[in-house]
Length: 170
Image 1 (cartoon, rainbow, N blue to C red):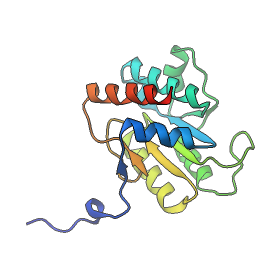
Image 2 (spheres, one colour):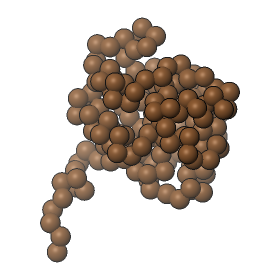
Image 3 (cartoon, rainbow, N blue to C red):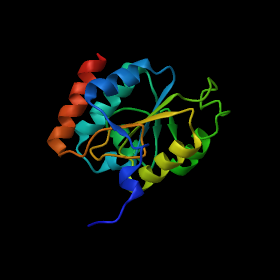
């Protein structure tokens, strides 16, 4: 018999989403941001290419954290802003923040490539202190503190999910 674990039974866990639901959520957003983390530098380029396609299809504000601009530069893509993940989370939780462009706070924050231990804490902060935001992770690991998240999957499954997301967004 195991002890009750609130982390595994919280009613506020992320909803595991399909590529179609992710695409619909991104399409419906009015002012989305795509946060790309340092893991883009250590995973195959095709994941970063999919992330760039998704950002371009919705004209998302792209924020580079943790040196992900190295991979993005290699792919001839310039993110709109470079900022530390913790500093970005502090800005996002402020409902009065006008965003980087001065157009108001963002309504959807997509994450990919942010190391799990940082992403988990950042998503927990946003979940508890930024009810004005919706969060989605497009990582290959499930993030229970996001509003929507992909399930844990293999690399091949992740590529399929990302390719279908791009297909549904086109």
